[in-house]
Length: 353
Image 1 (tube, rainbow, N blue to C red):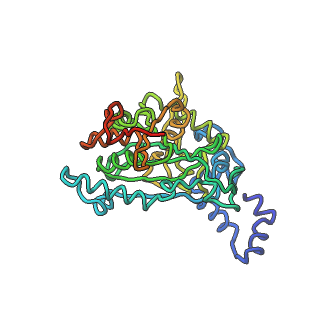
Image 2 (image 1 turned 135 degrees about the vertical axis):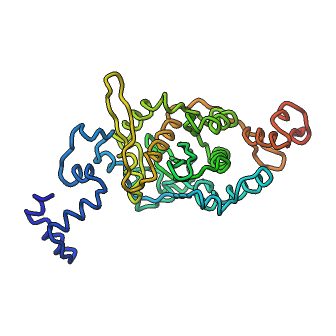
Image 3 (image 1 turned 180 degrees about the horizontal axis):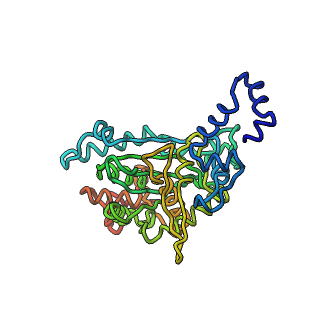
């Protein structure tokens, strides 16, 4: 960059933009926009920095994953969860969960309206998809990654939701929260798994996430994978590194902290195996690569969980009831899965030709 400035780049910029940057101001602005010395060296100084930085991919690979489009994004702090939904108690659990459901529908509406990303982006988008302008609504699929945290003021709990498009995974929505409210986290996870179209998910079952991921895996079967993060971290890291290297993981250019989160991941070789660790995200200090690991779990759900079979019942009144909904109803005291094997007239009715 200093060489380019010396050769007249800054003169052209000042002339075309009617600005009055000095060389020192311009370089300082480039450093500020980079967010970190590593990004500045790679983007502006043409210095790859070799293996000294230990980033899983170069910044140029991160740049290839960034596209001009918008996502739905929500972040809540512990006091906001309390203010919006009140304190949890067994007596008000049902009403509180209904409030959380309504909040999710209003905060990330396109997920539940089954609007494909290519249709939302329109003609001017940079998505290379032949169906962008198709009048037919495509079949939607979502991949959910759940990185668990319940620290109140520490790490983020992250729900990272991708939409597959060919070999690429495009981030559609991101919900992050810092709270110790396990009921809130479970309600959000279960609602996404129940109501998102053709969703497959994966969550970190190690440590704090063991109970919630165990319940999700038991209720939703093959649609949700509980992942022992400590044992699978190396596999998740290499898989994510490969996706980023070939730009198969996509996220919006406007969300700088998401790109910075992926770039903050580090890898080291300790003599026997590779170890993946977390660096500092200068654009989002609250995230210790929690967003990036949630994205890795969404990718894991996409690649690992491909053998599921789902079933649903078409009721007499025209409504459709899935197996998961039947299990949930049975737990709440309503007629449940066992009715599938009966001749109960509430479900089965003779069909006359």
